[in-house]
Amino acid sequence: MSSGKKRIYLSSPHMSGHEMKYIEEAFRDNWIAPLGPNVDGFEKELAAYLGAKDVAALSSGSAAIHLALVLLDVQPGDYVIVQSFTFGATAFPVRYLGATPVFVDSEPGTWNMDPVLLEKAIIGISGEYARKHGDEETKRQRDKETKRKSRSPSVPQSLCHLIKAIIPVHLYGMPSNMDEILRIATKYGIPVIEDAAEALGSRYNGKMCGTFGKFGILSFNGNKIITTSGGGALVSDDEELISRARFLSTQARDPAPHYQHSQIGYNYRMSNIVAGIGRGQLEVIEERVTARRKIFEFYKSNLSDIKGVSFIDEPGQEYFSNRWLTTILIDPEITGCNREDVRIALEKENIETRPLWKPMHLQPVFRDCLAFVNGTSEDLFNKGLCLPSGSSLREEELSRVVKVLRRVFGEMA
Image 1 (cartoon, rainbow, N blue to C red):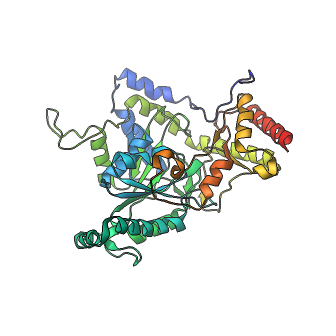
Image 2 (cartoon, one colour):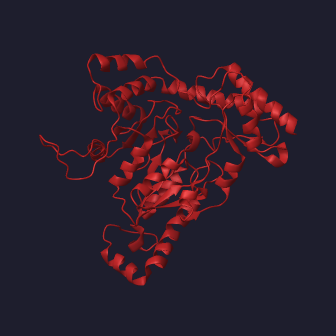
Image 3 (cartoon, rainbow, N blue to C red):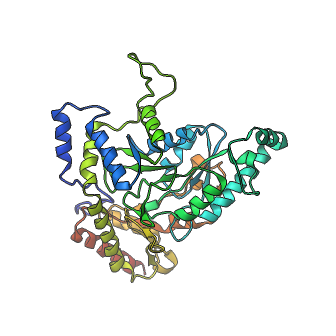
């Protein structure tokens, strides 16, 4: 039941007013296709904004993760280490390829992949593989392994190549601890795929999120900080790999006058119309980041005096979050109510909120997967709530959310 008041959404699309010029050009020139000038332009403009060498515009962030894994030659039987505290789309593509996701819990400061647990996972996977396959398989792999060079003595060279990627996530726009994650990834020679779906415009040590790893992925879903209604991108400084991603994303068609395919391809390319929306959105990305950060500050200044309600701060000067969604943690022992009590109370007032992501290691579909946990993400899921954070929200709408929250906490205290 709603209150009859106008609904306040969690994160609505916010058009810039510039989108139509690109869309009208596409219609005028009859570029109603999966490719065209807007796709080319959007890729170049994204690369320039990120400071990356190349970008492939795709149909979704999920497609971008899938292609990154394909390009890293992930095969059945391989392992991919994935941040547990994330949306399912981060992990699903690992299963598309028949590989095994191994989940790593979060550190409290960023809510993102815990570097200490990451290293434990790398060592633990090696032990898991040895237990499953025995000494003979271990010896066979050791004899076969020639690609890897130096490794930590804790991880046999014969097993390390089975871990094909590490996927940290910049959750809710907060950058991961990339210095430590990259240090560990480099130590063991494992490529990093950054899931920056929620973090366009976020920076770590002044460098854009999505540009640290072998690949970065972006999402332009309808609720993201900028949107193409649906879409994503694959980012890399390896221009040859991005060229290959473009080839695979257009059904891997060989250069022949007829349709010929020497390998499996995918229908993953972004359309020229959709890319036109993205170009108009990208023109105002910094305005959108500023607006979201102001929304965070509004909530924090109006709610931080409530005992048992807390916000995640940037852990240090090296972190700059786009504050895609403002989140709060609710301690039921102090406030007298839990996250679900608050969510339902807001829904009755026609205000959309959402629990924080349920960790992947708690999802039924991944119940048999190896996980290295410390309890952080489970606690965040139980206590956390995403508040309305769309950049088009007016101050009176934000004030309405705050008013309801203060009333709920006051009644429950």
